[in-house]
Length: 262
View 1 (cartoon, rainbow, N blue to C red):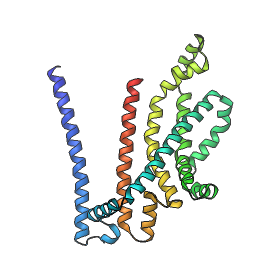
View 2 (cartoon, helix red, strand yellow):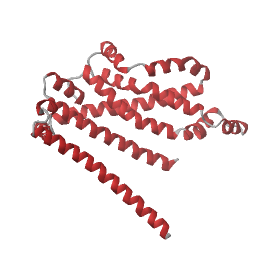
View 3 (cartoon, helix red, strand yellow):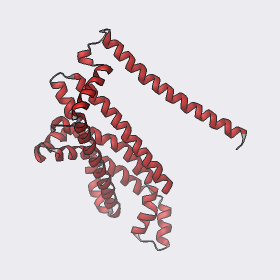
View 4 (spheres, rainbow, N blue to C red):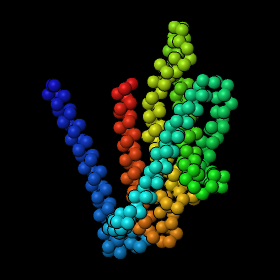
């Protein structure tokens, strides 16, 4: 390795370290300012809570085990809806690509449904499906499924037409074109959608739990706001932030593994 390369790597390492330190300073600075403001009565701690009150609330719920139940329910519903979106999103996009007339008929409906605010659909889904986990999962799926189908289908149709013609000239069948060219060319789009969808699934689950749940972090938020237990609300929001960060990191790891394969 040359001296110039070594210097470049050192600069990159220093830059990443500096970015990490600044992020940590922003986080701890905000937490400290929040705690000081609550302790000095600059803000009403009963309404705005504080880091120390959130920590005490978490420890209390940790001791009785209830927090594990709420986190596991929300996490399970999020992961299940994410898998369903991934499977049905890719499946429907494949079906549209394989059948051109079908895509011409259905594409406007997917555009309309994707533009529709999903919070407007949630009450109807709960009436149709009942006040249960099924309604929550369907709500979460509805948040991202239509956009996923459109994005992946657009990526399929955007595959280099010259390469497709070349494969057809060489006698490749439509399924071979799909598996050897179209799908590998769309891997980046699929992974990018996964990164977006994991957050949208969490949003959809929380919307569903606001309306149809007796447990979960969304239930804690809506119930806590109704009975003015704002520590529950703040704690649930902090846990959701940590959960979304963890899920995004997991999808990033999956992306790296997939890109190594392809």
